[in-house]
Image 1 (tube, rainbow, N blue to C red):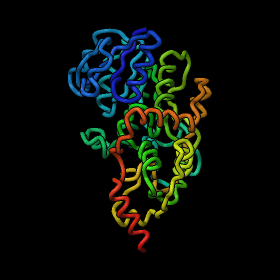
Image 2 (cartoon, one colour; image 1 turned 90 degrees about the vertical axis):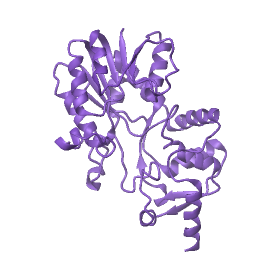
Image 3 (cartoon, helix red, strand yellow; image 1 turned 90 degrees about the horizontal axis):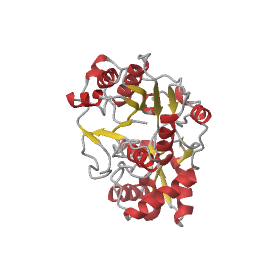
Image 4 (cartoon, one colour; image 1 turned 135 degrees about the horizontal axis):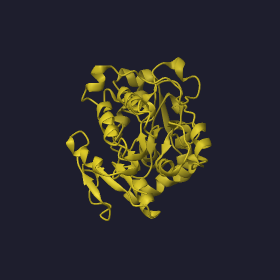
Length: 331
């Protein structure tokens, strides 16, 4: 089978590529060669920027499956899929649960299924080069572009926050690090908001299965475990690391008054209601068994131990956190 991976050397794409190599199905990689260019020297690599004419290189041959990790611009998705018309058997696109409209508390009272409403994307947002500010709208529009192509055998995955080996964001790791090294640390709203996320090893395995599965639906929530709260997460991590986390709860108003924002400044804190996603469709259709949440924490602990537990790049810095803790204690 001839597989093209657009991306493939960063995070989940890197794990997928490793898994394919280990199973004897060697993929071809298309990317800019900027992330970990030294890995996979045995693979054929097509170097280029998908937003330029470089992407036309993939149209010169046929592919059984194309896995797209890096698509963010709707017009580019339209161009890429048109290039692949008649040249690929299946197109697998990594989208995001951010495509769902989750800024209305009323919308979040029930588990979110694949038929939940997604964001509208204006023409201005579609054309904007600012991906970060329009990320949700662009991902939703990318999906609509793909779904509009009746001839395309497509699978769209919507992962939540992805964590695990090779994670470049440190958003999940932030709390593991706090448990291991924080004598005491802040827990917004006592850490009670429940969410479910996506473990990188399980997600890579799911994508690998999607390469070969004969029958499928178009869209899947790719969350890999039951809902949990940050408090439950740090308590379980404490058991595994042999620490008893000492936390100090602060309200959302306390953080907001000091310009500290949910998610952007404190990872995995939503600052609102639960965000629970329904993954029953992907479990049923793929017959897949995901890792338990505890086993995924074990995997993360093992991985970060090999790295020497570096300070997280994401979230509050310890000095700032200590400053806030001092303020709370004095008031």
